[in-house]
Image (cartoon, rainbow, N blue to C red):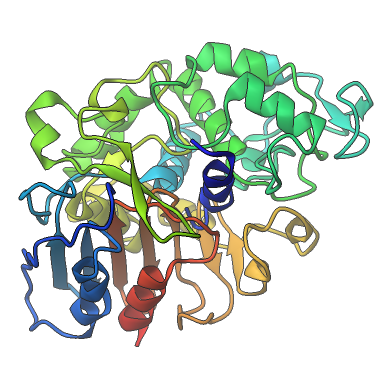
Length: 422
């Protein structure tokens, strides 16, 4: 991958965060309880022009569902996207991992303000860079240990730097040791080796001091696995996905479901064209060595709707209660101080209208998409987005197979959210 394309993705990986531009078939596998309206109109033109190969747009408001499945799973093939098509949801994995952590906190296997050192001894006695651009051995002792709360709120003191590759020594070391960047399950080392390598690096900031994106989620996934005494993927399947009926959500796609899986495409900001990143039988077609809690999951719109309804239901869905109301309130409330928001924002002025809860963004003031204050959710850099508004009992989910190339939402996503909130 060209450095520019990789750098563009790194800036988009959480902003959420195509073989040519062949025009897809004008397929619409909509299944709606309302007539087709502005939501379909907002997204369909992007598929018709070939900018996005295929998508599923789903909105549920007060138990009324509208869903549109448009375009193709793979450019050049007559294989239309359906309601249950499987997409790589990338950073939408983060709120799922945070939910798993909260389940263990309620069981007393983790405590919010306890140091993580007991289960992650690799992270004991942290050192912190004196200067972000300084050499790796110019450090001071960490003022305190990293806590579980630090991981959930992304205040561990380490994360993605939005800068050209190799600008800072810590950035270069992070890339070489950990391979930070595009979701790539086939390239990620096993959890124990990953945390060992991470433990050799100094932090960029003192624990609790600044919000920094992404790395905290990877560490959280390893912590959850150790606290649960089972691999993260198994814990999620048994404790979250199975009870919710999220049967198509996992860290890989079995052979029997590959026909429902999309091809993933990277968007080029300069040419507007799309290039293939991962085919259905590529990296997600086999279980990874490391089930990454930052960006590893695949899912469908109906599956992720069930997860969203769990949170909108304040921890219960139907007769099943998986979390307490108090836990959901903590997860979906802004946990950051003004000082936490002074470094690391993925887009200019982002924190003017947003905060961060546990593993997800929280809207603190109505933004340009008319997203109501109190809404929460997150995006995926490979082309997905989810938000929920408890004040109107609304969930919106947009799953596409085309990556973001900027932390600011692409026009398709802007039009979708404006139509949802109109």
